[in-house]
Image 1 (cartoon, helix red, strand yellow):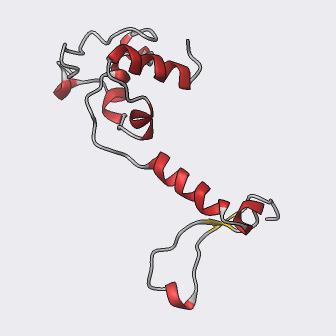
Image 2: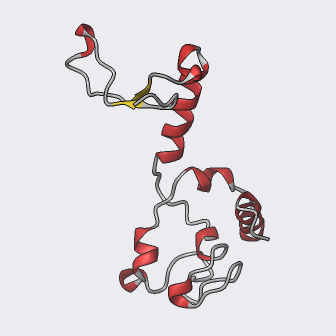
Length: 125
């Protein structure tokens, strides 16, 4: 493969053969300078999952078609303290969701502000 963005299977050397293999973009111009570390770190942060902060934004901002919940409207199961009233029996879409970098990026004092930030990030409203 000759693509400039080819991903190699692993970064290894005699000194690191005991370490876990890490993917590396070997043909990218970014890999030739310190910017590669920043890009790699940014991707790792974006993929990192975190503990739910119970901010409620994920239960208000996105549309949830399997529940008939429109964009920007509060889920009918979201309680006043931003907890799910049907947590043990919540829909699969909700079970599959996991808190991540977006939760940190939309942090704000009020639920309304968090929802607005969420919608702005995805250019939804």
